[in-house]
Length: 216
Image 1 (cartoon, rainbow, N blue to C red):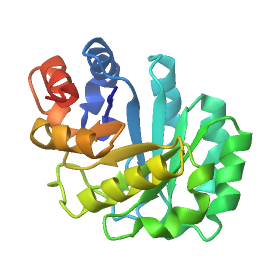
Image 2: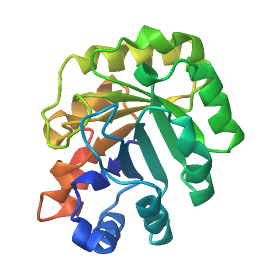
Image 3: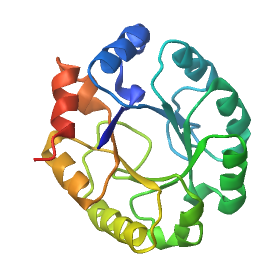
Image 4: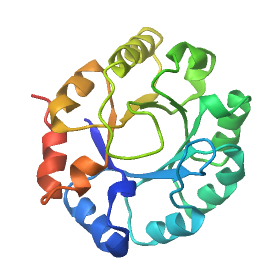
C-alpha cells in the first residue's frame, strides 16, 4: 500500500498545528520535514525547535530529509525528539556506511537521499543496510518545482535490484508529485510519495491525498 507523506515546507506556518491536524484527518501516513542549511542547498527552512514542536501535536511518523552538510550533527537530537525516518545526502557525505550505522544505533529508519543526476549505483554497496532510499525528482532546495522524468529509470532500477536480491528497503520519491504521475510512480515500485504544493495549495487535502493513492 502506497504511503503519502505531505511535505510541511508547503504548509501555512502561521497555522501549522491546524495544517497538521488537517492532513492527519485527510489520510496522510507520514509527515515529511525538509531541513536545509543554506549551504548544501541555497535555502533555509527550519530546525530542531520546529520539529520538536511538531512532534508534540501529531502521532504520525516523522520523516526528516537532511539537505545539509555534516548531517551527523543532527542525528542524536532528532532521535531524541522521536523522529522515525532520517535521510541524508550521498553527495555531501564521505562515510555513508558509518552514518547509516549511527542512525541504526539510534533506533531510527536510515535512508540515503540522491539528487536527480546522481546514479543509484553510488549506493549499491550499502543497499542491504538501508531502510529506505529517497530519490529527489526535482533539484533540491525549493518547493513547487516540476517533476523530472529522468528519475523514472532510477526508480525502476532500484525496484529491480530490490526484487532480485530480496531486499526490504522502501523507495521514496520527492518533488513535483501530483495525481497525474502518482500511478506510474506506484507501478514502477515507489512505496512513499512526498507531496507538498499539490496538497497544501489545494482547497481539499483529503481529495488530493486520495487521488495520489489511487493505483488505477
